[in-house]
Image (tube, rainbow, N blue to C red):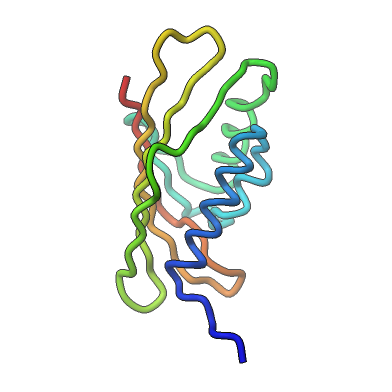
Length: 131
């Protein structure tokens, strides 16, 4: 009998899928790990957005130019911690570069994941670019 994966392992797998989608600048695949709700909340560099539809639309805009040479590279493995039954937090460090950039920026991402009927989904996230 196969052992069930822990919440941490399931979130780690979802983050790997998100990272692969980010490498392709595939906003739709990337957004699959987010809670499809008007209550989804993300703060990016001081700007807060609410609602899956709004956030997905913005993500598609950000990644629309596939020729921009944007790259996301994980700097170290994500820290993933169970916060009790059905809630996991993750902390990621990504290096973000664009073709022609002299120095890449670092993107720090903190997310709260919740176990929902459709699987583990990000319900709240904060992202900051550090030049």
